[in-house]
Image (cartoon, rainbow, N blue to C red):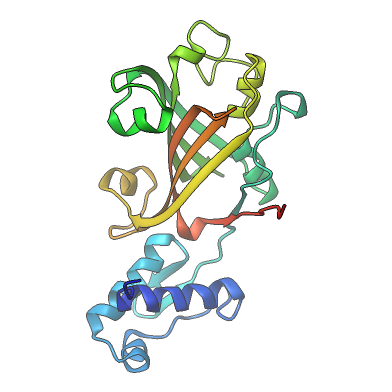
Length: 248
C-alpha cells in the first residue's frame, strides 16, 4: 500500500487530536514552524496540512494570531439507521441527521429526465442511453451547505408511478418511495473514498480551495436489482460517518 503524502499524515494526526478532544474548540494549532520541526518537513508541506483542515471547515485562521479549532457541530451520518420504510415515518434521512445535531435540515433539488452514461448504466444494470430520472440535491444545515448528491433512478421502474419525480410524492427517501410502488429495497452498498473537491463542489459547498470531501458511491437494490444509485459529496470536517455492521 503506498505511503500517503506527508501533508495528509500531518493533517490526519491533527484531525485525530481535534476529534478526540485533545485539541478542543478554541485551541490553537501548532505553528507551521512547530510542524516543520516535529515532522521534519518543509514549510510548504506544513501549509498544505493546515489547508486540508481549513478546507474541511474544522479550523480557521485568525489574522496575526494563528490557526484555531472551530466551534462547530458535526452531523453524524448513521448509515445503518438512515433508511425507513414507508410505514415508519415521512422524515428524510438528512433531516434526521440534522435534528439529532440540534440543527434544521433543508435541501434544494432539481429533477430532470436524462440518459444513463456508461458509468451510471453499469451501476444500474441498464444499457448506456437508458432513460433515467436524474436529481441533483444540495443539503443545508441551519442554512449552511453541507452535502451534495446526484441520484439516478431507471425510468423503466418508476415512469408513470406516483414516485417518478422523487420530491413530488408523500413518501420521503428511496426505501419509503420504492415501498409505495411495491418494490422492497433489501440492500444498500456504499463505497467511500476521500478526494479533492472539484471546482463546482468548492463553490456549491462554500469551501476553501484545495478542500477535500468524502465521496460516497451509493446503490440501493431490491432482490439483486439496482433501483437507485447516487454520488454523494460530504465535507469531512462537517460530517462523521458511522457504520454499524451486524455480525452473522
